Amino acid sequence: MAMVRLSFESEPLAVLEERLIALLGASPDYRYNVSRVYYPWALPGVRVPLAPPRLNNCCTFVEALRVKAFSEAHGAAFSWDARRHRQMMIASSQDYFSPVTAAVESGMALVAPSADVPPHPWTLIQGWRSQWGAGHTFLVADHHAETDKVLVLESNAAYGSTVSATVASASCATSSASILLRNGGRGTRCGRGAASARRTPSGGRRA
Picture 1 (cartoon, helix red, strand yellow):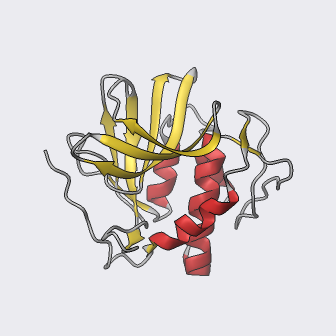
Picture 2 (cartoon, helix red, strand yellow; picture 1 turned 180 degrees about the horizontal axis):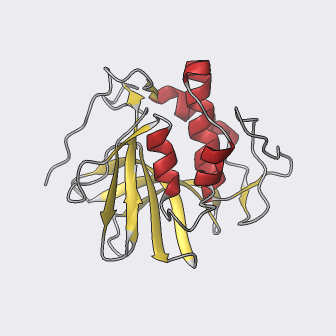
């Protein structure tokens, strides 16, 4: 099934794609550390440790990027707090896909409409190969239909904060939601996004 690229022009919390792209410049020098993390900037509504040292993990990379972009664009109209932060850190066993939940409930993303279509540009995905044993939070910036590859933004143990092209995988449980982004020159938007719970042969959720 072909992906329909959505416009989020009518979404009040949608932000320009350029905002996220500009913020990526603060991430390349970060190294991955699953337990010791330091944010490149302060976040509203929650106290977080600030760099240096420049260490992050997959959850903090995604949270720092999205929350900074939305809070700067919308000020008091966008709310973030310690509860949302804990959701990004997957602090509760009640919701294994809580980063997607946080994105949707805060107004940054919309639940993905179907598990049967490729991820929309700027989709947040939480995936698990094994519960608590091997999970990952990352962003899909775009999907290339001809090769079925996705452009991934992530922090990982091998390279730290990085951009990579990879073949779309169907080996984990996932949940996802589309971030609400306005046209950044490609006809796509990062913003409240679309989130949808989906399960692939390996499992996960997108937003």
